[in-house]
Length: 147
Image (cartoon, rainbow, N blue to C red):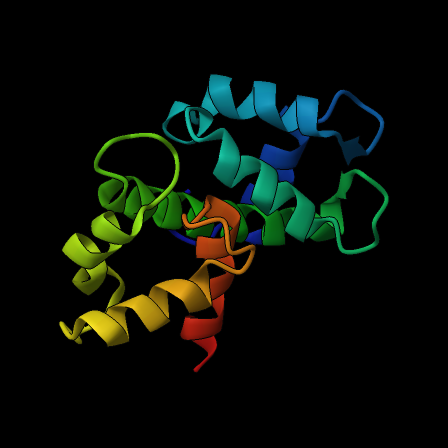
């Protein structure tokens, strides 16, 4: 799924995932990805985030017209999740300031000044909990990509 699928390939994959009603629930996608694409199945955070973002009409399901977007987002969020795990050296599913300081270059932030690093960390930590959570990280990286 790393390269973009044709419309026919996408339709075939959608049919594999679908239980026959023409829409995909999160449970259907979860089961199908674990079965057909296990490389993404272990990354539930990325899958959930991609599912929510692809559901553009807010129905709680992914329709065929949203499915291609889901696949693109799944790939993107999987990459972000891998990067997040590299930064999260103690594996507690959040990034502390020290972890950010050690790995800030992985996200393209080159300053080594402690104050500058703290300001950037605080900008990412939008809930001010003292840690960067995966959702905060995704939002930050998406904004960075658009710059």
